[in-house]
Length: 65
Image (cartoon, rainbow, N blue to C red; front, top):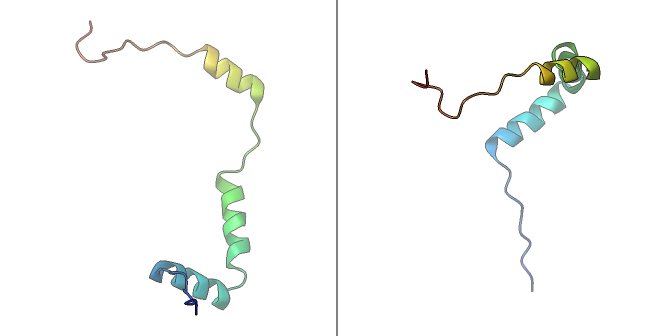
């Protein structure tokens, strides 16, 4: 007779799951906040200009005058 093994669920995971059940709109608010701060359109030409403007760093920064 095989044993039924329950997968481990941490206290933090249970808390987040219960929080999402209590506030169903929470995930939508999280996505909205992420879009506000992080999900910005990237300019490839500007990225290339930044990469071209990099100055190579010496292997040992301190005391290499």
